[in-house]
Length: 233
Image 1 (cartoon, rainbow, N blue to C red):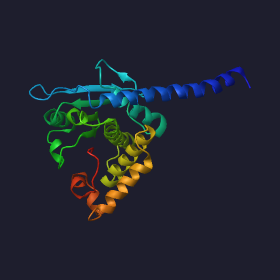
Image 2 (tube, rainbow, N blue to C red; image 1 turned 135 degrees about the vertical axis):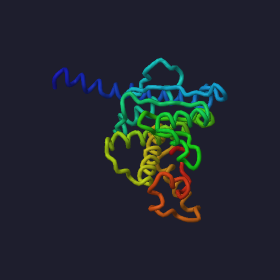
Image 3 (cartoon, one colour; image 1 turned 90 degrees about the horizontal axis):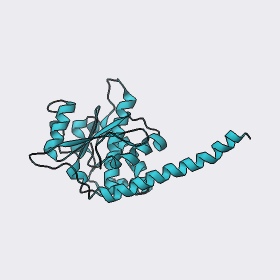
């Protein structure tokens, strides 16, 4: 065994421990900051803050106090789940529904916000994530991580689809986003995958009816005909 190979064998576990420690620290920060974070103010001065996150989950740019929300989920996507994301990843945290709707219409086109039957907490666009800070501020760490993981999955869908014109049925896209959300919550230590799955099975068991999958193919029908879902879209 050469000295260089021995060096690699020693360094690899050390690097994994270091990386795990960074993610663990970030999760602690998320636990503290999700419910107590100061997001953009609502009202007449309603606005959205832009964050940029690199492939290792590192914050990019000069906007402080918010990038840690995305650090751990982005790191898990790149290094554990192996799901592609654009680099840098952009995320916009908006103060309230007015600022959120304005940002969605500016990025996705005028009238895009009106396509939803009920206001979502987050939406994935080709320009990045758009999230409602007023909703996030009322969530615990697991709730924040879950919403972000769900929307990051839709960003990954767009990256994988590239320029394809045909769209997969909404029940596949939303179902996969929920599966990834469960995995992120599991990897982050909030809740095991089996616990999340059991919760879904309980919701099916208490539902009065099962939806017709054909009724769940289009995004505009998802909120009306699907079983109870997360607040993300």
